[in-house]
Length: 363
Image (cartoon, rainbow, N blue to C red):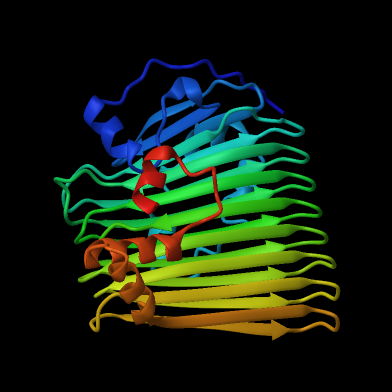
């Protein structure tokens, strides 16, 4: 197997691009173990500062390592639906990154990867592959964004993530697209024996339509904890579909989402499947409406296919509690400030890994 050591490259991002990416978690490259940035149809940055991490444009990774061709479309099917087929058909020169955290690596600083759409009305189709190898531990920050001048466009992305036995991955993802964009995101992940995944997704910005579909497969003794915060102002439509398969004995999962609508529409359809005995999982879906307009639909579902699979869920959707609002206003708070405080408490996440710029937007 060919090995490579990447040296830090000269920064190739403008100050304006850095400002846009900062809102979705970007930090100085010297404070990161690795950085990849895709701008429109170009991999602008692909650099690693840690010998345990390799970052390459996906097209280059396919030429460099034979095993990458088995990872690409190893979890996703090119025939999954029309959007995935569109990406597959544009794979003559694959656009996306390959991140490899090597066996046993204990990566000290986070690895960051970003996608930026800078051209108005552009069409961007990407495919990213991540491999967290056996026994490796890493923290990852990823984000997707468009600058304020870009209102419309279409983005379709595929992410395939493999966690080998005993690996640990803590990840944060943030999106901040244009208000009139259409975005379709697909994610597949496989956690092999004893692997652990902890993920946080932040979806706060206005967008015309966002459709997110993800499938997670947990093998023997693997565990996954995921949390998401979702906001839909007027004119925003977000559809989120998740499927978690507890495929191996002893696999465990916890999947929690908090959703707020101030006139937009949110559909959150989640299914938890117990395919093996001795597994346990929980789905939590809570929604808060700030106006009569808009809609939140929370649809958790459980499928126990094996004896000894212990699955549970809870869901709630409601308006701001009038008594809490009245209490805060009686204490001297203005109504808007009282509403903001209630929403912040509802959305609060127990996650000190959120980048500071993102944390300010959430809390």
